Picture (cartoon, rainbow, N blue to C red):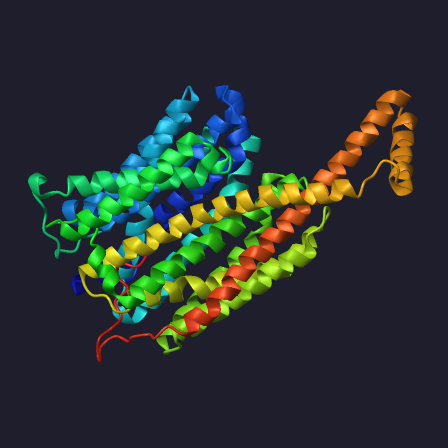
Amino acid sequence: MQDSLVEYGSRRVIITITAILCALLEIVDSTIVNVALNDMKGNLGSTLTEVAWVITAYAIGNVIIVPMTSWLAAQFGRRNYFAASIVIFTICSFLCGNSSNIWQLVFFRFLQGVGGGALLVTSQTIITESYPPEKRNMAQAIYGLGVIIGPTLGPPLGGYIVEHYSWPYIFYINIPIGIIATLLTLQFVRSPRYAQKKLASEVDWAGIFLLAVAVGSLQFVLERGQEDDWFNSSTITSLAVISLFGFFFFVWRELTAKNPIVELRVLSNGNLRIGTILSFILGFGLYGSTFIIPLYTQSTLGWTAQQSGALMVPAALTTAFMMPIIGQMLQRGVKQQYLVSLGMLIFFIYSFWGYKILTPDTGKESFFWMLIFRGLGMGMLFIPITALSLSTLKGQQIGQGASFTGMMRQLGGSFGIAVITTYMARQNMVHRNELVTKLQVDNPYVQQRVVGITNGYITKGLAPDVSLKSAYQSMDYMVYKQASVLSYMDVFLFIGLIFLFCIPFILMVKNKPAAKGEKIDMSAAH
């Protein structure tokens, strides 16, 4: 870490705003398309399976590039690499909006994800290196704000754009921000001088290839597994095997190569190993709960994307409020393990609360305090986990360690969504079967209910046979809705219990402090 990179006054403010804008661009773009899939499907004449690739391709591009970011920044200079990534992201945003068919859009989304991966990783390095060591935790708080609020902003913003304009504009809004961010980066951001460039012959091309194959295949399996019925699909099975062997040969290659693309030896640091596991769990909870609540409110309660997104805003503001407080607590010597444990306990309370309040018609006001608890929990997890992960690393190790925590948080999110969708689908079947067994045709209550609904349809002018058929369809829909709600309840309980289960293990962690007189360097945390 070079002290010459510390900035002051308006220059530091401009660099901070630039980096946060770029981090937000990347994160918002990972969730903004979710609400526009329907419009894309109709407009591009594609199936739901094809249009889901718009999300999958972006995630694969993201997760392949994240572990390489530290190396690429050293190779080309951080400022140049960061500016090039913004340019790639911005150009691909324009190309995504201009796509004339679904596979064009998927290809440009993959390239956009490759550009975006660097924005998330490098922006925090830039922010933290612009602040003096005593203000590093505050820099973490500023960055953490973007990471936590980003996924929340996507759906309401996407909903507003789709409702008032058309889907290409969810990509076009990136263009002016990207141009401004590129100019500001070239003008104000500086690169550290500790890295040496490698000749083309020294580059670990085999490592790059194996990493892309292993991580790309794994991401595909996680994103598409449930829809393709997991290992009943030959594609999923083949890619799972390729991913397994890819990781095996990647690890072997990186431990024996002279100039590895990813420095795995940094994982010999105990705190970083624990931090990468915790980052995975954080990603699981952050992206899992961001995925499940809008899904429940839109599919079961019939809310619009804007209403669902607005529901999450108080939680995001709570996290924003908590970030600087947590930063101060860490600076005053409160142990990271205690804050992480308390954050996980609060997240369990939030999940259990969700389990208790869900019904087929839960009101908006019931969510408020529950989501405030989610905001509190997230605020207490993000900075302490990053601080614990990187607290005993030095120099270039920090960037390498930060890449691991970033990749694990991303994979944790993908893994969480894959597990949640699979678990929900299975539980939905179980609950539906249980409910159907209780609705016997000869049951007087069921007969009475069917007669009541049939009469209701007859009074609206429908023929008796059509009314009876509609009554049975209504009963079937009620069963489906109730089974869905029970499945969502199970998911909340499941996520909560995972967090609760982790607490004893976190409390057992021995936190090895930095050497006496040595500042904890958070310069490359992300």
